[in-house]
Amino acid sequence: MAEVYNWQIGREMDYPYAEARPEKQWGAVFDINKCIACQTCTLSCKTTWTHGEGQEHMFWNNVETKPYGSHPIEWDKEILDRLGVQEWREEDGEYVYEGDTIFEANDVDWDEMAPDDDPQNRHGQDIEGYIPDSEDWAHPNLGEDEPAGETFESDTHISEDEETHPMWFFYLPRVCNHCSFAGCAGGCPVQAVYKRQEDGIVLIDEDSCEAFQECVRACPYGKSVYNPEESVSQKCVGCYPKVEEGLVPQCFENCLGKIRQHGWINPPDEADSSNPIDYLVHDAEVALPLYPQLGLEPNVYYIPPINVPDDYLIQMFGPRVADAKETYQAARRGDEEYRKLRGLLHLMGSTEWRVEEFDVTDEEAIGYDEDGETVARVPMEEPQYERERFDEDNNAYRLDIT
Image 1 (cartoon, helix red, strand yellow):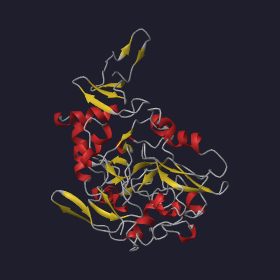
Image 2 (cartoon, rainbow, N blue to C red):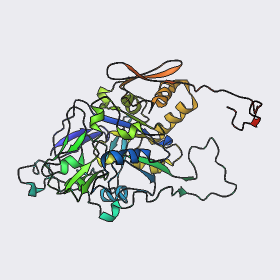
Image 3 (cartoon, rainbow, N blue to C red):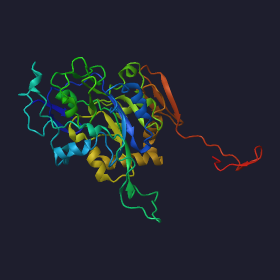
Image 4 (tube, rainbow, N blue to C red):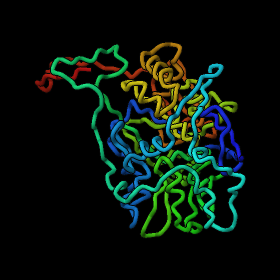
C-alpha cells in the first residue's frame, strides 16, 4: 500500500499518492475565543471570489455555530458517522490515532488503484465521503447561536473560576485547510486538483476539470463545491495573489476580532520557534488541527474555546485539548512563563502583511516580514487613561471613565 507519515495522528497511513511536501506550507491559526461571528470574513471572501453565477451557494469562508450549525448541513456528523469509533492511545507522551482515516475506512489497496489515463476508472472512488445535496448548501446560518447544555435559571451564576459554562456554544470560522494529504486531490480522477510546490496551496485547474465531483465527495470538510453554471468544481484559493506579495488573505485582513494569524507551518522536526505558526502549534501546543482523525493533516489550526466541555472538543480537535486550554488560560492570566505566547496573541491580526518572525520584549511584541522588516508593533499592556466622572467643560457625567 502507498503510505505517508501523518504527524497529526502519530503514524503512517494509507494515501493515494506518495508523500511530497511542498517547499513551504501555507498555514493559519484561528483563536476561537475571540470570534464574534460578525461574518466580516465571510463577506470579504464572498465579494472577492464567489459573486458570480453558479456561486450563490458558495462560501469559501464561513462561520458556523457549534454544536448545531454547519455548512453544508451536518458535514461533520456525516463523516464522523461514516468513520465509526475513533480512538487515540497515548504512547511515550505522544498520541496515536487507532481508528481509520477516510483513506483507510474502505480497505483500499492504493497501489492497485494508481491513476491512469482513463478517468472512468475513478481511482479515488473508495475514499470515504459523500456529495451533499443541493438543500445542504442552502442554509449557511443554520443553527446560529443555538446553545447546548443546561438551562439557565434566574439565579444562575457563572463563577470566574469555572473553566466551562453550563450552557455553551462557540463560533467556528472555516476556510479550506490546504491539507498536506488533501482528499480533493486524492479523489480527482483527472488530477485537476493539485498542490502548489512553492506554498502548499491546493488549487483546481478548471480547464482540466471534467465535473466528476469526486473532489466534492472526497473533501470531508465540505470545502470543494460544484458550480452548476460553469460545470466545474471550485474552492478557496488561499488568496494566492496576495500571499505571493507577502500579504495575508482577505478573510484574515478583514477580521474585526483579530483572531487570525497567517504564515508557514513546518512539520514538528523542522519547527522554527521564531515562526508564529510553528510557535503556536509546536512550541506552545496551544493550536490544534480540525478533526485530525480524518487523516488529511489540515493546515488550519484552532485555539480551542475555554468555555466548552472537553469531551466535545476532543472529538473535534484531538486529545491535547485540555493542555491547550490550560496553556491559553495561563497566558491570559499573565503568567510570566507564557509571556511570549501572550505577546504573540496580541500580535495576531495587527497587520495586513504576513508576519514570518516575531519577538517579544518587555514593552511590546514585534512582527517581521520575510525580509526582516518590522511590519507590526503592539504593546504588551494597553495604556489606560482615567478621567473625572463629571466633565465640567461640557457639564456632563461620564459613565465610562477609563
